[in-house]
Image 1: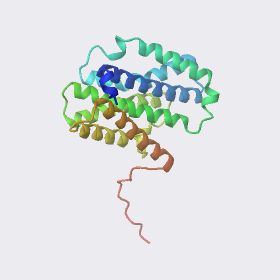
Image 2: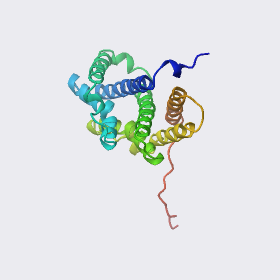
Image 3: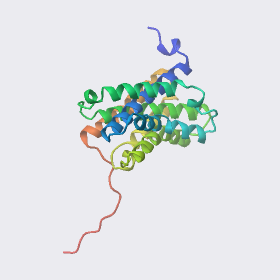
Image 4: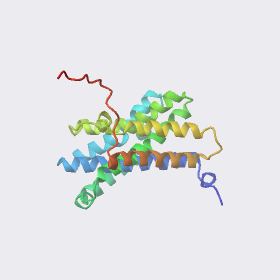
Length: 217
C-alpha cells in the first residue's frame, strides 16, 4: 500500500491542515457572531480574528516574515466565502447540538499541529514547541470571545489548553519513531479533537487548586 506521505509534499500537508483550522475557526466564530446578532461585516471581522489571530502572534514570536496571510490572500478570500455561506444557512447549522464546540475543537486540534510544526521548523526546544502549539490554537479563540464579550473557554475550568498540550507532547514523542509526518499530524489532530469533545460531553474539568479551609462549626 502506498504511503500517502510519499505522494504529498510536507508543504501541502501543512497547508491542508492550516485550511482545516481556518475553516473550523471561521465556522465557530461566525456561529457565535450570528447568535449575538452581529451584522455581516461584524461576523467577517470576528471570523478573521478567530481564524488567523493565533497564527499571526505565532509568526511574530518566531520572527517568521512575512506573516502567512499577508502574502497568501487565499486565507482572506476563504474566510469571507465560508463566513458568508454559514451566515446564509445559519438556522440549519444552529439546530445541530453543540455545533460551536465541534467547530472549535477541530480548530484547536488543527492549529495545535500547525503551531508545533512551525516551531520545529525554526529549531525551537520542546517547551517552546508546546507553547507555540498552544498559542496558535487558542489566541484566535480568545480574541474572538473578548470581542464578543464572552469569557474565553481557555480561562475556564474546561479541558481546553490541556488537550492542546497533550497533543503537542504526543507529536514530539512520535518524532522519535519511524512514523511518517502525515501519520503524526493526523493522529495528533484526532487525539486533541477526541480529548476536547470527551471533555465537552462528559463534563471533564481541571481541578480547583484553591485550598478551602474547613469552616468552624
